Image (spheres, rainbow, N blue to C red):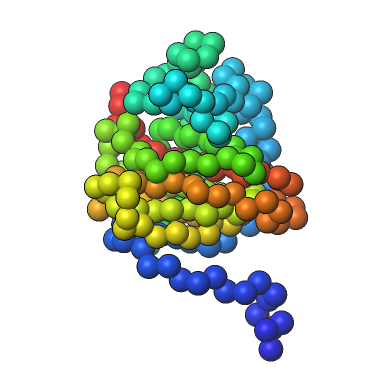
Length: 221
């Protein structure tokens, strides 16, 4: 009987706070491969991937930016911590992807059509990388953050808006999954506690590690 509905078991449902949405399987394998190709192309662009430094220490993820260059506490048009080059703009197709993601997450067509992300932070996690609990608070706009995962699964921790400590929920983000947080959850602390090696599906474009694309509206001129 299980073969009638595919071999992959259903994932447990995790209750999320208002404004947070998890959409499993948002991207097809073909779409994932195409995005991984774009990731490699961005890495050959004017501003190559780097390990951002927080408190003088390098993070364990490599990051490349579009639209605005992120350094802790600051967004600039040029890569001030690297070569001073201007980062490429967010392409139109990525804006449309963000709009489609919002529509899939909450179904509000008006909010989705008005979504105009002007910044993309693209992070590569190797199998040992982590991301500590933090807030995405360098943007002035309260618009939602759109996050897309490709490659190995990860254990994603989504917390509250007041503290890095509990309450939080842990969920597994797999290749092709979408996660959106806005509204009352826009300033929630969140992080990645583990990357799960060997879980990238064949054909996604990655055999190891994980790519995470986050789209934001900065509210900056």
